[in-house]
Length: 369
Image (cartoon, rainbow, N blue to C red; front, side):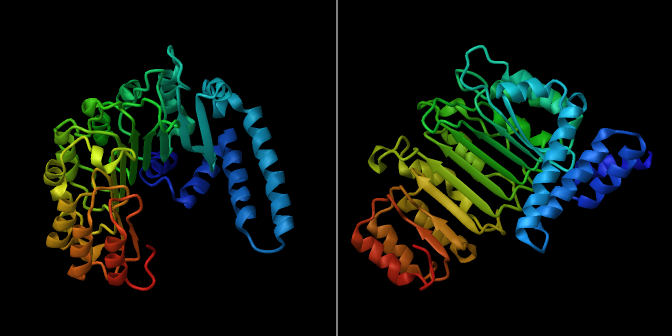
């Protein structure tokens, strides 16, 4: 293995290391590869943007360097973008650069029925400029909203250890946007740190499948997980609650998309039973921020929170827009388990002034409520 091969391997495993990019730039410049100069230009832009000295001069220098970098990108568009140039011009792909490579990209089909967005994603994943991409945001793959065509492309492209952040979310908050079998991707992205899924599936609970190919969810490096959905199959929620994610620090589960608490699609007892394993502190010893919004916020889950002892390790608790009652609020307050919280959110819930007052008296003075 050559030095260049070794650097490429290390970058795929640790795409945030500045020293590797600078070392790689030297190899590329020796080979007369224009990417070497782009790395150095974008490095100088970063230095100018956050350096000391006169702010006006720094901004002026950063603008001048950005123009040089943009000119260099256009001059060597065939190297840096190739087929992606047309996708970006047509709006199917949006790109953010860092040190000569694509750091983040968003791919969306713009709601068209015969949509080429999956091909745009295929070209993105195959291009050398995306070799160390760390963030991918997926919008709609077409007029019907499904992400499944994107997932087929991603499975074909294979394992990508550099990816750290994955978002599946339609830009239209109220647009029909079923996801598909997103769980099939977990083995392909073993280094994921955050996942965000927002789906409006029109009441079809099976349109989002979180379980991996082996029927479970294993995400060893994941630190943040967020799911916003109107309704979901109870077996998928059970798999989610039983997920193996020992590094998890933040989890958000929002069910119902702001539907009135009295109109929940799933009985609170069934939801509580499905999600109870999630509240076991042994499963997520590093969990600090817990959000159970909408239908997921129930009296039963509040009781489990108290019994399991998870509250002791939390700094933030979000039970907003949910079904918790004054009785649950009084139990939380009386347990003494929320006296250390830095933030508690119960906006839009079923609580009366009496329930809110009980919580206020139990919270520390600096807590955001």
